[in-house]
Length: 115
Image (cartoon, rainbow, N blue to C red; front, side, top):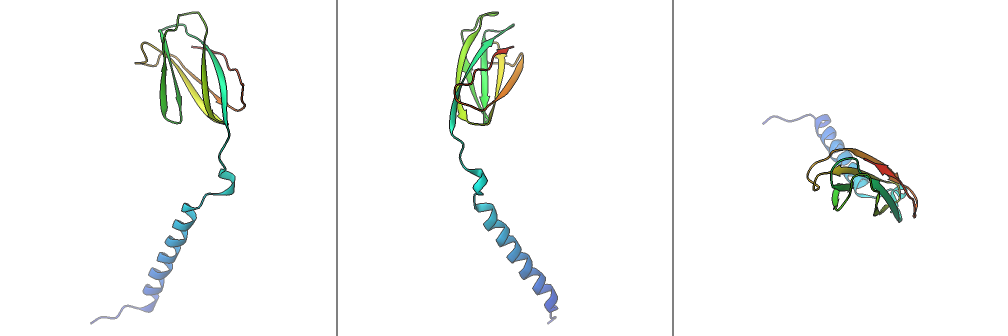
């Protein structure tokens, strides 16, 4: 039977304790990560090609149809304050022709897009 040195066992225990502490820290929510209040913005969108617009917020895509080239149409989005919103002109919400975006900061914000 071969005995392992105590130093190796100490390192393994220290590693396990460190991983446990890191896991506990990862599970706690920092005070700075408080939930942001939802804000609603109006996005007047004018397209130069296509017939629809898609918005993307936090990985969720929404299709907005019945657009006419050259005529602005309002889109309303409600997101947490500070959220990036991406806007795409499209053919039938199938492709992305022109892409733009903005960060929504305040309730009632109006951001014009020409795509």
